[in-house]
Image (cartoon, one colour):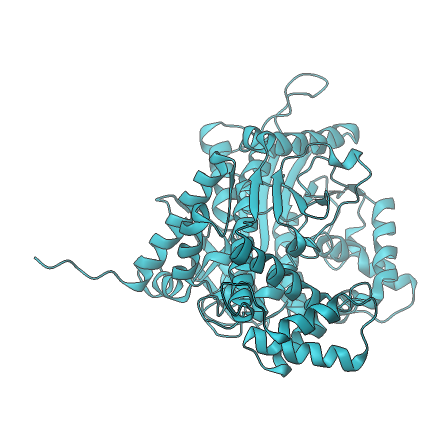
Length: 554
């Protein structure tokens, strides 16, 4: 009997499974060399998978959009470091070393010396997977550069590389020298001058105008040293991180801080609604109308929220926040290490008739928690739903009435800004499925000019490890998946355990889930690496916020 040929979707699924098993093995081992023998399986898995977000990773030319995406999520200067150490929260904040925080990932990183970067991991395994896949991509791309500039085994380098090095080491680069350097770099990367110029402009900042060129130089330099001198880059995992991972240390501390704040403000006995969302939409919905009325401005929801989303309107946003702090909002700036800030709204103090809701005041409390990251969603929600053991009068159950999740997700039909209303979460790579009754439905959003897709959604192990074939399977098979995200199944795991097993909260707790599309990974040029939503995300964000608040207050 002939062996049945595997589908491309099955091959992708097996590649993802192999990547995660390898990462867990390397973590338990404590260190590995990403471009050495110990990193082979991880590299081969990523090259076989060819994730959409990493574009041309399997081709000879260097992938530029994926590079920008990765650099936004890793600390400035990491390309110069041969040693990268993943640590727990080990007290580096007490040192004189200034933390480096990547623009698109809230994690503290510390440049220990010229060769070592420490990355603080406080958000669980998903954070480790995220860092390792990005670093593997970065190092694969660096060797593409080395392979194009190293001429022979004697270590002779191309003229282009030598000229680039001379330019990079100068204190000041003239416009003419910059253009020549970009021409040489384009040739080394296998890209056009136009493509390289666009990426150069995307990455430059006032403090680091030549960031792109310097990044390419240092990636190539360390890769050349690996090829010629056998000086392999090293990734380490600190003993403290390996010891603490998975023990909810940061999540428990975070949840206790939030509950202590509720007790301090005499809100612990009130009906509580939890919303996982951003730190602006609920606040703006409740207070923007009052603030702008005082300024005598003509207001409506659409114009107001678009105006407040413009970068130049920071003063108005600050005015709204100040009003909110006077009239019922309590802000918790996280110090636990989770990097999840919290807003608590005492609705008895909010002038709801003056908000965009025009509703009657009530005694409920809304807890808005900032976005969790992957597996961290389970840790934080699990701890938040537990009884408060440190309450003054003994352990105290919270009266949780609803949990609402608003998030960004990849969509498999439609485009950026469209909506997904899930009926279940399917956890990728496991047999865990979480069906639930969603109090939000597609009919709640009809007539708003957005496409709406309902049905199951898949909770993926990482957004950077998805390819078209596997996603097509989830879309077209009987699973009928409408989108993918990273937290839904983790939240459901915590909520269902609390309500159906532990009896920490009511079995009748209401659940509201809605996502708006940040990208469509099935469309070339529409992945996360193609850029952000911009103002496209304003309408769906506030529309979901409005519907969640209406359900809570109804």
